[in-house]
Length: 174
Image (tube, rainbow, N blue to C red):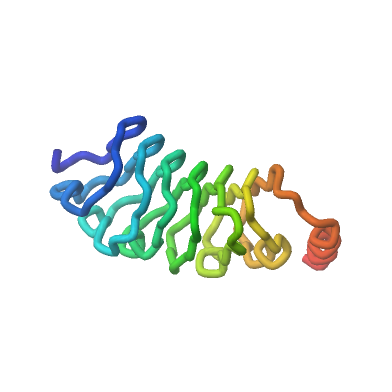
């Protein structure tokens, strides 16, 4: 398996991921672990063994805790965390990240959530923030830092009209 480039572990009953799970998979570029039972990803050394990782699909798990520092040593370009129930999400600089999928993410109730995309905004081409639950989002401050954005999904975002007016004013200045 040393030359393996893609690993699909979707729809299993995986509860945890450990660094040793990826031993000798240093050529792995795509890891699909969607629709499992993973609850947290916090170990900073988790993906050290797979530095060529470009695509990571973790959607539809039970992820509540995810420290993105675990991805710092990868070349990640695509990250899908959609359909998880996150307590929080703090970004670290990821210079290669091009696609961020957060569609249908549920942010735990009774907590004030505000996603700060400033660490990655200048690199994104695709951003999916559709249908979030319990998320406060200042659309105008996020979008105007994203000069290369090509695809934006804000379906069911519940924007305030003041956001739309501010957004429209900034668009006319571009």
